Image (tube, rainbow, N blue to C red; front, side, top):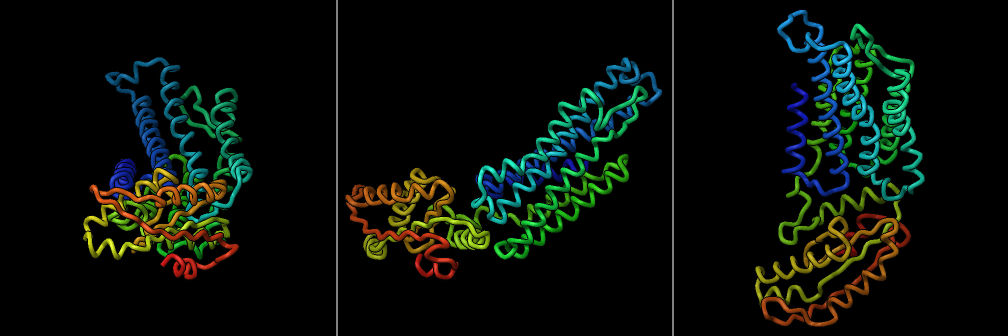
Length: 363
């Protein structure tokens, strides 16, 4: 029950205080939901087992037929086993996002990486209901592990070891506090798996894992730390962090820099409030053009767009759209404005390969 409240707290904080639209936070939310479902199923299974084995005839479970009792236990154990054993796969995906290697890996990489997860699904959903080779309940309602249970543990450790490998390989692009938090979470996860393997009747695994996810939550930036308060898109600090992570992960990407040349002039004659509304309108247009995840406000009328993978092929289309947007006067509050912009496209790491160089160009 303690773990249940911790998972609910994590989910609430993530949705209300963090940035749930980020891809890495979406994966983290999936982790929390899977853990929450597994935790609820684990508690219900233990509670059902306790009620079923009571001799008190007043209890409704004592009046059930043996087959019905086993059905209740099987439903809860499957609801626990399935999300619980898929958790390491999504944790691995979360690490690929944190380290930035998700921007350089192909579909083939993720197809291969999903093989252990498919083995887990196949074992739990297809093989076990027929042969009970992974786990089962006897006629006496005693839980038994099968020979394929070790396969589930092997698949989990494959993802954990792969996560550790990538985490250490690309740790330079990760803030120290976040790196330490992830390592502590992984340590608790490995310890919980070992405890569950050696002491299956001690329901401590979900509680220990909840502490690990809570540690990860602490190191996720709040929305006000990564968004510009005026334009409501990612700010300069987050742009620098994302760029550094991508460079350390040896990803190939493009940055389209948009500089408004006469922003100071309009700010002096029309005022800050008017200019802020204009910048917000430009940011919203960029979001509609390339998507919110790609747009960054680097202050002083400087916007940047980061493109990965197949989106790199859209650079010319984006340049054309920007030129078309600002080639004619724009109307704000019934005032015609001629906004002069300068574009620069950076091919990383081909033309530039350091955050400082990129930042100097953006500024």
